[in-house]
Image 1 (cartoon, one colour):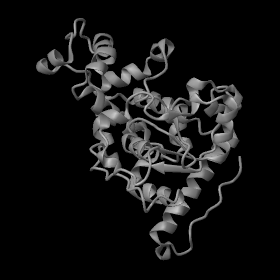
Image 2 (tube, rainbow, N blue to C red):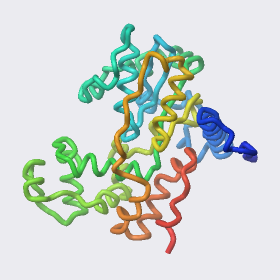
Image 3 (cartoon, rainbow, N blue to C red):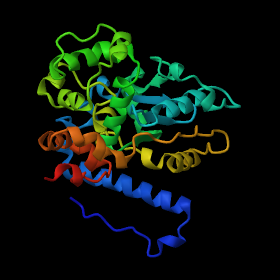
Image 4 (cartoon, rainbow, N blue to C red):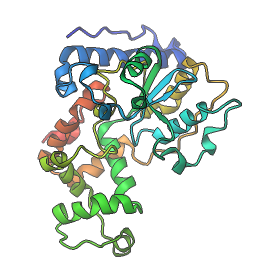
Length: 306
């Protein structure tokens, strides 16, 4: 593996905010290149080239032909707001304020143009010439956010398709309520540890791939097969969004929606994992290790040590 070069500025205080953001962007892309070049087999699941990927492996990539942009969306990483932006860009100027677009609309199937809707030769041409971007997040924080959103809130789909099963198999509840209304009325819901048990069960992925809200980020966006031009982080969302729109020459016509205070902070991770035994924390890290390594997130030593 190539040695990582230290690009830290000798006097970082003199760097402007834009320069620091640009420097961080270069480091993120360099890390991806080094990780993929050094151990692509560990991150590619035996799919050595783009030709080995199925359309199902690329279904999270959406296209804006008007501006030559490809975005890989990852649930629980500001994807609602980026989908709003992509939807607005597919319409004519003057562009609508992305914040005004209803959340339900952006998540409708086929509302955005999928890369896989094109013939394979066109897909490859667009991937070569378009500006490609994605946004990622600390993997454990993303899991907590997914649990809070899908199991602590009123959601009939996730209750029926996941929570009932988790309650039966891991929550010692042989007869969970039939509806999410009944479950909420009785205070019945899977614990965070029940959710982790479900993820760690080898049978979960044997049945079908992880649901996208907790599927590994690299498996959604294939960064060792798709050479992304911009890698944003949820932790620096507003700064990264501003830089990306500047790169796309859209900063004067599109305003990225403001982000609200993140209820799942890195500092609260320790509290969430108190109920998860050490051995299971270590197994969970192994399950998401590729995301930590590829996207530059520190190994959570405090959760994995005795």
